[in-house]
Length: 409
Image 1 (cartoon, rainbow, N blue to C red):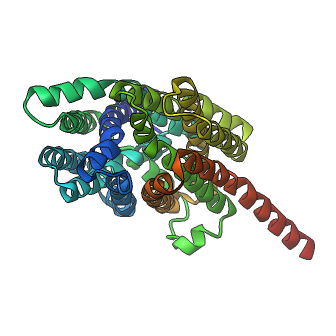
Image 2 (image 1 turned 90 degrees about the horizontal axis):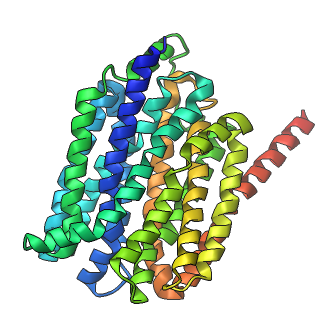
Image 3 (image 1 turned 30 degrees about the vertical axis):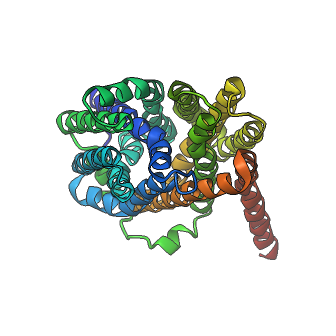
């Protein structure tokens, strides 16, 4: 049985607020990651490594975090995740202060592993609503990222000044702000996320077939396969272009404030229209919304390729579209990945999908540095634009294969 309207609103509101506060800290840390790494190493070649290790930590932690939540509940998992993320932020601050690159890498691994719990919050929202409203519920929690997109990057310069004022390296300041944000998010979840959303999913699961599904069985479900392809492609395209944009802007002599402006526009695109995306996914169809997102990613990559490092208007526009295209694929793909999956296998499907997404993002983060060094920002952006075509091509192939099977029978 689903919760009452009052309880449902409180639970989703708590997930929204917790995720919003988390994203403030997340974006503070992520925006300066490549800049801090470049300052330590003196080169952009490996500047994407800390963020890549962070995403890898998120990928590696997603499946065990899903399993932990299945045993202990969403609330316990999110509290544990925020605690680990706080530790990662503090280690990263120490690394930037001391100039120890390997310590920064360790800090980002913890940072990413802890954040895996927040990325699963969107599925917790889906557990307290009826099936036909899951896309909208997922979108509402993703929308919380708007808070981070507006507030997070705008705090970069104040956080940098705070770091200098207390006698530490300026870029260490944002990591202290990140630790504070994660702490507040953890306290909010601990106090207000009651009853646990997983209790309502457990009731549905008890009424359904609870035979566990292997990962291979999940991949035999066409919508699961396509959803994972769409989620991975969107993440790779977004990460490739976004990760190196701060370095590209700074290399043109622009200030940290301009970096924050462009990244704010990007993250606004990632999150601000999520309720509309969820509404479209529930009414027009999730596959159609995914494909629309791919078109936006293609346009964004081409526009970014034509932008100079000092062209604020074109960079803001292209990075906004990059975020919006990612949003279409992420919201619709997240709803699609559990659409045809039995209740007893949804947690596994969520964990598997997110593991693929974050691991591919880690690879893309490392690759972005090499592509920037080898071919420049233009080549990097065009590669991203080309990869946006992968989901439509995969869908065409899947439909042709299905049609051939039907004709054969």
